[in-house]
Every structure is written in structure tokens, then in C-alpha cells.
Image (cartoon, rainbow, N blue to C red; front, top):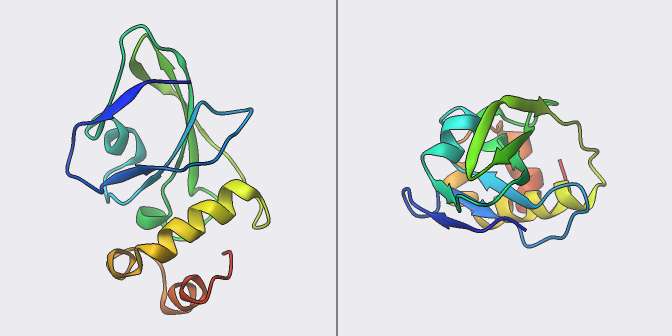
Length: 128
């Protein structure tokens, strides 16, 4: 598990409370910044920690195949070169939990890259 603290604007990035054998932490970004900068500007990892994180960037990108990105954290620093697009299916528990968090923040997502239909689906609890 990676130890971190929030350092940016409150609510800009949130951790999902879901366990994963692939990722030490899973986050949902509510930033319009590129994924690397959304993490770098809003999270601080402990210097001794290394691991992997997954970030849902749907707020910025919309519901596209590129919405999930993984990064390595090495000695508390995000390795920008380790960034990978991760395809996650609609019925995956990570994507479902992320969609639920997005739906709970629906007033924020009104300013996102989601189209009207996607916002309506989120509001009624459909995983997109």
C-alpha cells in the first residue's frame, strides 16, 4: 500500500475504496489537467514508497478507452514514463466503483467532458 496525502485543491482527486491485486491505489480525477499533472499537483507520496496506481480521467477525457491510466510510483515520485492506458470493461468492479463516485459528484461532472446521455446514465446508476 502506498502512503500519500492530499496537497492540492480539496476534491480534485479522490481515492476509491476498493481493493485491487494489480494497483496499490486507485484514484478518480476531477481535474482538467493531464493525468500526470493531476496526480503530481494533488498527491504527495512518502519518499520510501513504491508501487503502482490507477487513475480514472473520465472527467477530463469523457467515456473513452483512454480514461484509465496507470503509473508507477518509485521512491515517492510518479514515473511519468511509466504511464499506460489501461482498458477496463464496463462490468469491472473498478469501473463500476469509479462510475458511482462520478455519479455522486454529478454537479461537478456537469462541467466535465461527459455528454448529456452519459450524464443521464450516471445519474440513474448505469455503468458507462
